[in-house]
Image 1 (cartoon, rainbow, N blue to C red):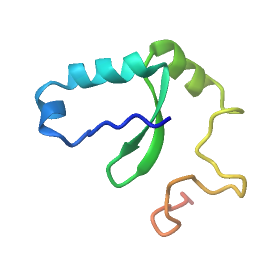
Image 2 (cartoon, rainbow, N blue to C red):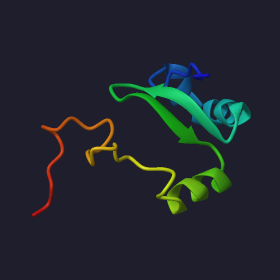
Image 3 (cartoon, rainbow, N blue to C red):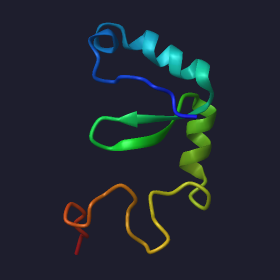
Length: 80
């Protein structure tokens, strides 16, 4: 289930804490949409965030082919 939440709304800019509280009430990991990026999963608790950051076997930005998920090839520049 994707949580419908407008990160660009005036309500969010006026009171971001209320918006974040709504996301937290939805669960420790929430599917939502970011402007330009599209559908993403965000973590809403310290515990969930720590797990995602520490478990690179389960959670990754890499696609099976090795590219970065959600990043257009023309935007991604590999360091030499």
